[in-house]
Amino acid sequence: MRRAVSAFAFAAAWAASSPPARASVSLTVVFDALVEESTAAAVVTPIAARSVWEAGRIVTYTHVRVDETLAGAIGADAWLRTLGGEIGDVGQQVEGEATFESGRRYVVFVKPQIAGSLSVVSRAQGEFPLEANASRIVARLRPLPLPPRADAVARARQRAPEIAQAAMPAATVLAGQSMQDARVLIQGAWARTHAPR
Image 1: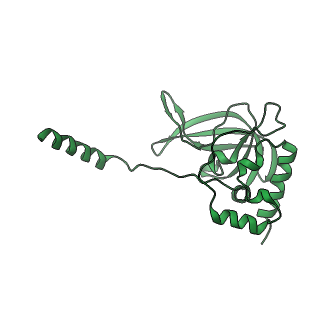
Image 2 (image 1 turned 180 degrees about the vertical axis):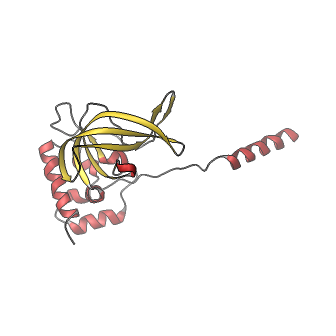
Image 3 (image 1 turned 135 degrees about the vertical axis):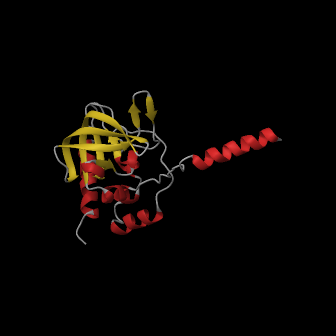
């Protein structure tokens, strides 16, 4: 009996001294909501990355060259901040976070983050790799998160009832699209969601 009490006391002391666990739930983002939350959409190529410790977690800053601005305003290059990465022999992976391969091109939807960096809107849902020839968005078969927020779907349907893509998941709208068609879809959604009210 004494041993069980000691183990329990140890577990209670350990739990009390541990930092609180953090978790998040990802909801599927509808196309118009992704575009609306973004300050820019662009085709980028990662050219370098560095990982650092921030508040007890690893964060990666990826330096990207902006090959084409699709909507909004972004400079000729930018730093994208994502959670997770590797420092020495320590690695942290954050499920659902955007990840980048050096030299591969991506369509990204971004917004301002800390220290002049940008974050990818809705994490991996705002990052779309292009095929090797950069003419088409890769159709990835990763599972979507939980269903989209009902208010985002309703807002998209109210804003553009005649445009089915407005209320569809962004991944469904863009996956497999040629860059020419993706450009038209993104710029159309930008005009709807960023129009002066």
